[in-house]
Length: 602
Ligand code: PEP
Ligand code: MG
Image (cartoon, rainbow, N blue to C red; front, top):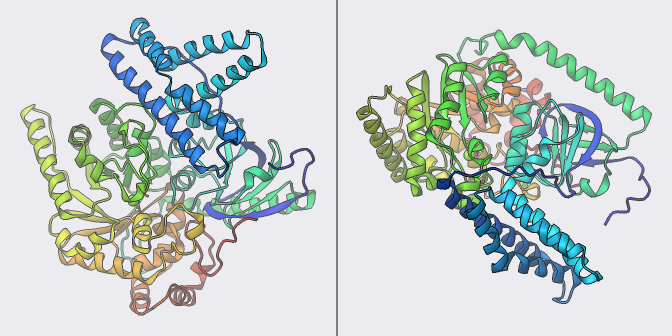
């Protein structure tokens, strides 16, 4: 445990730049017990069985969580900490306790969290009022177990993020997808975490909400205390803890310069996206929730190139109904008027865990039940989403995109299901329009088969976040391999080249929607490779447009011919830096810089 009695002097930690910008603020630590609020909800009789299932699942997950902690402790079996956790697990396995809760849910028709809280509080008060140290200690154990079950039932992680004091810099070991989904730029000035990389969902969310973030700092949670002042530099992936007055002054000056630069980019939102020699490159936005579409529009997006619908699923305990999904999609389609809206079918699994999915813990989730695999394994859930998308498609310019596709069988099966749903809606008299269907090229098998794939779909979208991770076998969120995970690897360049060639030969468009599309040098590479359009976080729209407008398509194509002969990442970086010195000097943070690997924090 860190010594938290006397304030240590100032120190600087280096991590991975995840979202640009500078922030000065007071630390709010998210490593303590998360707060919760119980609101008992009455149930309709048809809801009772579902609520009991939700309770059983939460108890199971709480038990698994404890087992994982116990397995990770390298201590002898008589270690008091291990014994305590084993005792907690036994409470979770106590059948009479479970039966009492289940019977109360059934008889009182009250939501699981309310009943769990009531039953546990009763036990706890009985124990705490008994004579003797032993019983009082058991009361404390029960309190701990209660928090663990409620953590599962109420998504406490997400609640904790919502209750952060205003103008704080959030410091946490890491942020789960549901916590990331709740980040509010009006409250949070910056984010600093022990773990995580530039393309995990905390980073993507921070960027799309415009919150400066540095991830993968090693052990920042152990080095700061609640209320410490910190300087966070999201452009260079650095944080300085407890700065002195001179450092604070210098940092504020930098912050002001950055603000001025943003203002100077302001007018770009209304300028067209084309190169100097007038090659049009439509620039669209990636969004996670309907409200993000407003920011996308104000930043000049020509449409939504990637609507990640799984955030919709990760915020709730059950599956959303067709009507709920339809309303969310309709909001985006209406906001965008007739601009294109590419809705990606749910990509749950991997790091995007949907509470209701029942996937459980997989030892290798990125290679497991994720994206289209999950959708095809659960056709009823998939059909509900397809119905909602098809209905929204009648109101605008909608396209559907399939994630995590690894074979043409999956594409055919998804198209078959889409056809069935379309006929079903037609029979019901629901108005529908043609819905172009595209595939994310993010697994190497789809690059290899891109010629055949291009004959069966209407467009391709390169998902570089996953394509890099699966091609280079480097986890996109693991800071230990951040130096291997690199968009400038020649294998990535050639994969994109092959995909674009295949798409164009078949006469379909190829876009790019991974985080790579928001890096200055990578943008030039993508243009030179012939990618037709780019989709980026709303906060990246203007800087990317500035890059597009600064070059001719002839120049970038010419450089890419040489780039395709490079054998190593370093050679490719050097060629690009030599050819585009101005772009190379721009510091945008997403993409790890191989020439200057991030030092792991001590
Ligand atoms: C990608 O993989 O590049 C992508 C855009 O999808 P996601 O980041 O949601 O996996
Ligand atoms: Mg992906």
